[in-house]
Length: 259
Length: 305
Image: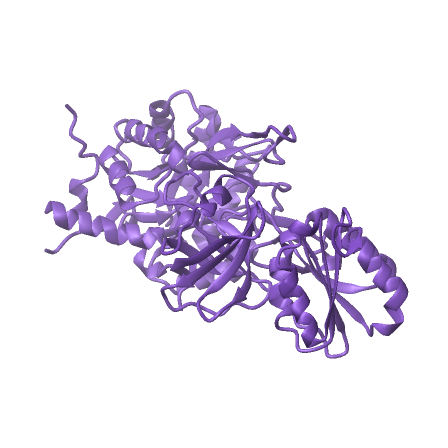
């Protein structure tokens, strides 16, 4: 099993103006990822950009591993031009992944923007009733909304929301969570939060969790050079000291992070 | 063809000239999935201090053209935990163990070096060139008197380990500083550490690193490093270790032609976690192709016009 492997681009499809769905097929024996883990993917073969970029995996298909990425800078701009058949180097699966919920807990999954990739990998493997709250700025940014909604067949209740009200509830996922907890709180036995999204969203979630005495996990994002614990570039402050997002994370208990 | 790939850095006999650069290889175990540590000349671990250090706030790294800036701030677990938890792991392998050390006083360097020497490590690399901490580090590396005192104090106290001094590129004269540490008794000189740099996000107008400045590494600094290694190697008799932007075999060969007896791979490990092992194999392939039987015939053998 190789953690550093070569993979072939199978497809690279735009989902909106800035977000793409990338499918890579490893050409070597690789390890199976668990939900919440990530990969470092090479964006070009020159020294500029120099470093690989970290991406949560979205799902495994019979053909390969799928990722979502948004164009943010030099690296992701090069990825946009990946053609099927291109070979790229990748490292993974990396990081810890989401811990399982206890049998009494009701998982409440919260995804903001492209954070949906990591949350989807978890939702697709949940064995029981759960909630998934998915928010973005507008309808076109609710990537893969149909796939998320399809999870409803499996007793996963999907609540979508947009900042501008162009789809679902008008407001943020934090608003949606507040409403859910206000109206249905008694109906949700021992909610356990799982969240991935922008930092302000996660911070908002932390405040709700604190206020309502809820437990849960957040998946964090940081710039990283290696992805496997060597460079110490991606550390985050926790109540137990500095921890590496790539190694001890990216998933941390929500109360452990110093926001 | 039987080839001799081994190099001797003072008492430090290595099976090949490939080492890891401090701060880029963790304590070795981080690379267990990627590299057979037995294939390396030596592993140089992350800089160690007497007490654990938590390092700088985030963001600590940012990418720049063909390089990266870092301001980790020497986060480490401290020497006691290293000896107890990390050293036994490294001892399983047939490779030399070099520990990079730093302190804020000469006494701290001395105490650390003694502890590590007693523990039987093969080499001690004095970090007198970290640009990212306020006390210690580069303060020792840019003042020749202070540097000479530090090196000679440690050299006198260390019985078995090879003492390596890692020079800063941020000095007025590499030949003068090289001679200073050689005269002070350093067995080996390694260079270069990172070059101080900075980058600003023009949208937010914020520096890209929380520490504002950081150390530049990667292929961007290689020509500067090759020149400095060449200057150092022709100024001293002790062996020189070349560091700075080595990613591939060709880079390693270039440093050796400039006079390096061994090389360290740093940022290259982040780009390709198997880089060290591949370079060790690549050097053997190069020698064979060129019909060179002993690696010594490569060291400093640049042809000048």
